[in-house]
Length: 307
Image 1 (cartoon, rainbow, N blue to C red):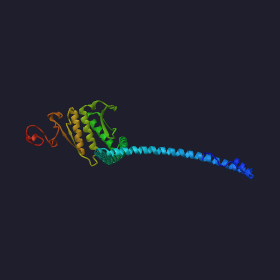
Image 2 (image 1 turned 90 degrees about the horizontal axis):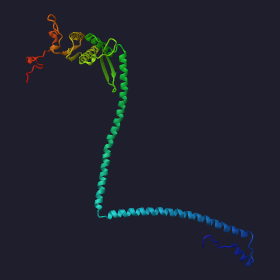
Image 3 (image 1 turned 90 degrees about the vertical axis):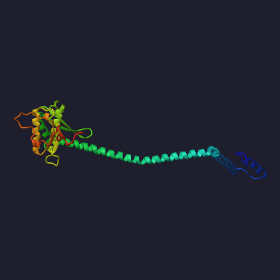
């Protein structure tokens, strides 16, 4: 049956009905015409729906055919691989690749734990840095407080240091403390004039050595009431000083000895301050612990034979 063909014709039916003497007009004819029109409308709608469904099916078939082509190529490649004479070589190659991959995985697993430890250490280092910053701030606060308080331990050390410098060389000594960029304490000993201005006197080795002696003795004196060492050792205490300053330094050392601070000093006889024949010797026999010379074994430090 052709598309849109209707086998029933109302006009032909009317002619037939007229021939047999049956009335076929009016409402009956209209109903048949409406029925034919309704049938044609349904047929047209169904045709459009079938066209859309046909388009969808054709699109799906194209996708399926493309996938079939791809699978066919992969199947052909797999068959070619299996039928190749070098299949065992390829198998060995794949096995080696698998072994290499497993080795990489094992190496990465081995590195993961140190990486976790490294991350933990980074966090710990960050915590320590914050603690160091806090500690540096506390140190700076304590330094400012110690420098501002007249009765603090540091103030006592500064006072004793200045007194000793004044008594020995008749100059003014300055002792201050600062913190460097790492938060560590740095002590600065300087020689100043009466106005408090820095001089170049502390640039020489002689006065630098004298300031070290003064600082050591000042620290020991400041800690006299605490459990702290009571002795100090200095080598070449009189070196390069004039006789008057040597006598002044010796007087201060003996003064500190009366406080309970023992000074162990070494010097050569040429560094002793000169005295007249009628004066007492610089050191009494009970102050001299050991005299070294080159006149025999008794003059050696450990009383040993030379070799």
